[in-house]
Length: 163
Image (tube, rainbow, N blue to C red; front, side, top):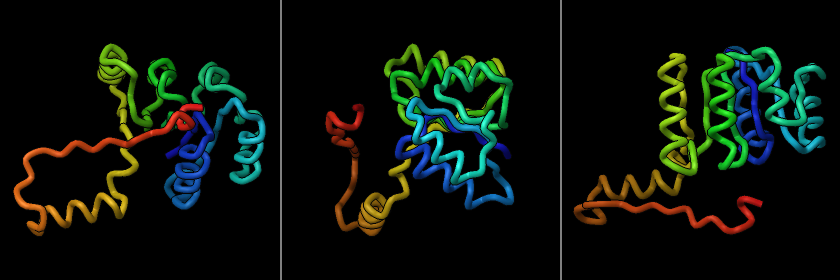
């Protein structure tokens, strides 16, 4: 499976790219895009990418011919829908960082296109399998908390998260 990554922030460059590399027998990173030149250069060197497959914006990569089977979209939340739409229309399956969109209209747009083009869209919930949540699940299953009727899990994200 070949992979292109849009957005080389903490998830794209520090989480997903190494996972692709660790699974080199079944996955190959073929293209990247980010607004920050140093991140693109780091990915190019670290993962031995071709110069012509390293882009300085998501839009540049999405304008190119399809370079992978799957696109990982790790851009800013407000850009997820426009990048997902372009990627699906280009023929990519998606691994899409949460949230899919900032409103229900955007979610439905991605859903409708995925169905129309018969593309998989996998939404990442990266905290789901962390030790913290595994411990909570174990405590609930063992009955230490009592009967759980509802759970509200909120990530208290600071202003710097979207900077």
